[in-house]
Image (cartoon, rainbow, N blue to C red; front, side):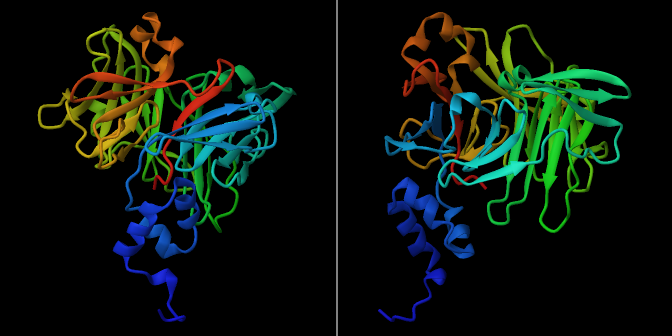
Length: 372
């Protein structure tokens, strides 16, 4: 073989076969070698992992290879941080000082997000620090308490990051009436935190758009392509078609399919139905049940679908990954004693429970390495 071979320009098929032969950790290191390797890595199958934050260490579990990796991610007690959202290899964390961080679970690289009491631009809002665990959001002279508990129990947050250039967007809902967002774009300066006044039960982010599910069951769309989030009216078909909420729903999340369609993902109280997915049929103007996701799958509360693994190894396309508190009825049956997460198969309408990796003091999350 010539010593002058340009390893960055290997045939994509050859490079893909090399990637698929690597261990998971080596794969995620290899894709950072150059832009061509990163591009090819994005064509390899994706599937969800689990991460367990506990004490000074964490566990990364690869369910396909059935391997557990022990990592010291931050050098701090991870029981003192809360994970708000994840995207690809990154977690959005908040600590008791109410400081935000992005953490790469494979490299332990961190990115600090400006604090809440930093500049909020030309807005009538500001944050006033109270103590270590709380601060006040001031709106036209009226103060709203923001405490550590608001983050500990919050599931309404999103993260998006471009791993090649470090651009990212974070957003989270506070008191269900405000959305705080921060957008970092290379060479675009610091625009600071932004606050958008809107109802928010849940939200999802894809392609510079934040989809917000409101109390009255409508879906608003905020455009993040500019300096400030702006509500999109034209072209938002969902404004005229509220979702028909029913009492049998235990939890509701929205997700955006690769096609750009909004999916309503429901966790139901009924023992025989468990989970259900709906999307809007624009021809008849009604929300309809979805029986298949094609080659895609999703994590309950993750916000977007991903292409599922080609092989069926317990996690495949047409699946919904969830944590035990996302599903009500099986908790009552005592399943939680043996497992704390599961995978629901849309086709068979059955749940495969996964063995616990942690103790009760730990925090477990799904994430999707390599998501792009």
